[in-house]
Length: 338
Ligand SMILES: NC(=O)C1=CN([C@@H]2O[C@H](COP(=O)(O)OP(=O)(O)OC[C@H]3O[C@@H](n4cnc5c(N)ncnc54)[C@H](O)[C@@H]3O)[C@@H](O)[C@H]2O)C=CC1
Ligand SMILES: O=C([O-])CC(=O)C(=O)O
Image (tube, rainbow, N blue to C red; front, side):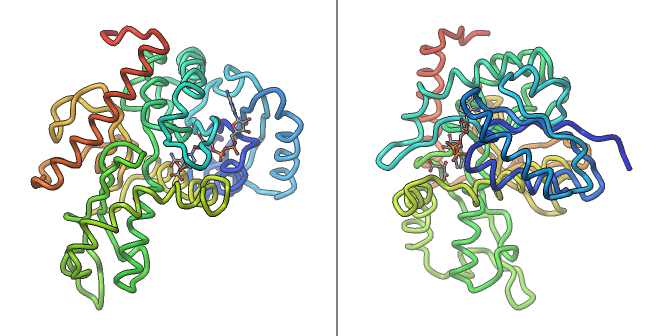
C-alpha cells in the first residue's frame, strides 16, 4: 500500500460534509488503494458535533482511513496537506442570492488562504465550495501567493451534473450518456449552462444535444433557467441548501482532478482566468471546460466556437464576477495590483 495522503475538509460538522466524508474515506475520490489521513476543520462551538462525526467515521471500519484529526485551528488542519476541500461557510436561505453571503464568508477564505500559504504542501489542490464559491476561491488564492494560482479551483460540477441530468431525462438515457456539457462563469444564477458542444449517446450513436432533444426553445430557455435556479429550488423545497448532490459534485470534481478526465471528455471547473481565453478578463475564477492529465495538470479546452447567444451570456456572468471581485477586494482592502 502507498503512503497516506493528507486531505483537509472544512465545515466538517456541517451537512455537506456529512454526505462527503464517507466517500473520501472509502476511496471514491483518491482511488481504491490510496490511504488517507483526514483533517477535519470546524469552528470551536462545533467541536462536540465534530467529535460525533469522527466517532462515526471510525465506526465505518474503513481500511483506507489511516487517521482522522478534528480541529478548530486552520494551521493544524492544513499542515502538509495534499488536498483541501473548503466547504465551511454560511449557506444561503430562501430569497438570498449567493453573492449576498460575500461579506459573511469572504474573511473565512482570507484566513484559510493565509494558513494554506504557511503550512500546506506547495502542490496542494484546493477546491472551494463555500459560497460565493468563485470569489471565495479567488480570495483564498490571493492570500496564498506561494502556491501556484492554478491550484485554486471553485466548484461548478454540481451545476454540470444538474445540466447533464436534465438533458438525460429529456432524452430518456442514463446520465453518463451525456458528455461535454459546459458551465461557463459564476456558480450563481448568471452561470451559462451550454450544450452546443455536448453530445448524447443513444442507440449506439453520438448525436449533438440539439439534434437529440429537438427543442431549441427549451434548450435556450427553460433548460438554462432550471439549471441556473436549481439551488434556489432545492432551498425552497427543503428549507436547507443542497447537500447530498453538493457532496457528489465534490467527489466528481476532485476525482477528475486527481486521476484525470476520460479521453474525449471535458469537465467544468472554476479556474483562474488569464485574460486571453474566450474573451474573459483576467484575475477571475471563471468556470471553463477543462481537460485534466494523469499528473493532475489541467488545461482549459480552447477553440470552441462561441456564437452571439453564448457571447452575451459569457459577458453577463463575467461582469457579475468582476463586480463580486471588486466588492471583495474593497471589503478586505486587498491591493488589486498584487
Ligand atoms: N459550490 C456549490 O456548488 C455549493 C456550495 N454550497 C455552499 O457550501 C457551504 C456549506 O454548506 P452546508 O454544509 O450546507 O452548510 P452547514 O451550515 O450545514 O455547514 C457549514 C459548516 O461550516 C462551519 N464553519 C463556519 N465557519 C467556519 C470556519 N471559519 N472554518 C471552518 N468551518 C466553518 C459551520 O460551523 C458548519 O459546521 C455554504 O456556503 C453553501 O452555500 C452548497 C451547495 C453547493
Ligand atoms: O443554492 C445554494 O445556495 C447552494 C448551492 O450553491 C447550490 O445548491 O448550488
